[in-house]
Length: 272
Image 1 (tube, rainbow, N blue to C red):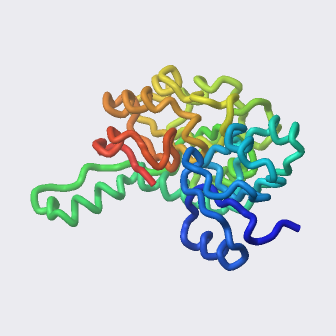
Image 2: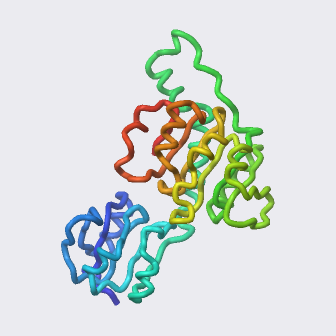
């Protein structure tokens, strides 16, 4: 058994998670995986998917036997290296399914009904000068889901109640009760809203680029609850700045928490 004081916590955790960690463990804290190592004789690492654990870091921690990644994704872990060294790894699949689906649906309504802008319109007393522009309804929209894993399928099941049409894209046809579109560009052309639920990693790196965004078009939206690495942020910024797409909702970023400040200047993007 690994002693409770022989665990290195890499990165920051939300308060409720951190409280639970401290209730069970006495971890050594390493806020930045690129920073100095506070203790080298630890036997386990506790981290989250947004913090890369590199072979260079692990080479300096020769006693590590296990890495626990608190999240669904594990593309931050060097799996080939871990296998070679006999280091165990774990993640928490399924634990965030409900939370991600609920957030995605909230983003969907916030984008289509322009809820943040409507709140600002009323709170800043612009209403006395004229009516808020018409928004659009979710009913009847075409929703393209990129990545039909556990979260994608649960999201699709929830969205059916809103009278939408659903299709999906992924590495293969899973023979689900929704149309499979093998071309991501064709799915983007079909979609009023394109939702990213796919894993990170090399296979999906920057798969949302200029061609996909152009296919999505000026009346459609992008939602990313997958990984920041899935989107080419330079192409997305250009598309948002030039109204190539109607807007986007982003819960993940390429270099989080240090997102590109240009996103903060846009009125057609929702950031969480």
